[in-house]
Image (cartoon, rainbow, N blue to C red):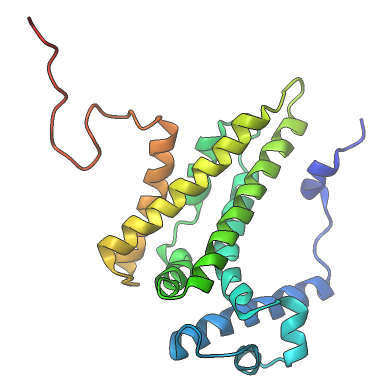
Length: 233
């Protein structure tokens, strides 16, 4: 049986040297964008500033990114794409939500979330950056849908419920963003290892809440109140 285009990833050849060089250049620009943002603040730098920090030409910058916001959003893309790669390594018969939680747990080093967390914190004062951040999360939702399609292709007799998959992808992204919001409220953008460990735990816990249908306990999470006793009247 011929392989589906959706399963090509598992049999693809190793990246060529040219592809590796391009990936390295893209990463260098992404790292430089965050470094420039850190020192100059939102809206106070140009594509030329990022290119200079990355050691590339202005033309090279625009070969990879259309705007400074896109270069910064690639930081979030990088973390989410890494999580998706881990997701695709999970067993095809595993529940999607369990795979999503396991993929996040694979990013065991809290420092793995550091660039995304720092960008999220710095973006709070910039509408343009926040918009790019949302676009990055939306892109990831689309990739979750594609990953679910890949699983269906690999599972004989399985059918894809498009409504379920799209609703699930949106819910996963909403839970991820909720975890980021709670972390920022609690930790005020602190990037210490302990704070980043908290963020990672929140991301994983958010997936757990989604998996349990938000009914893992009889109380509202974060409270000590016991469920109301049934009326005896």
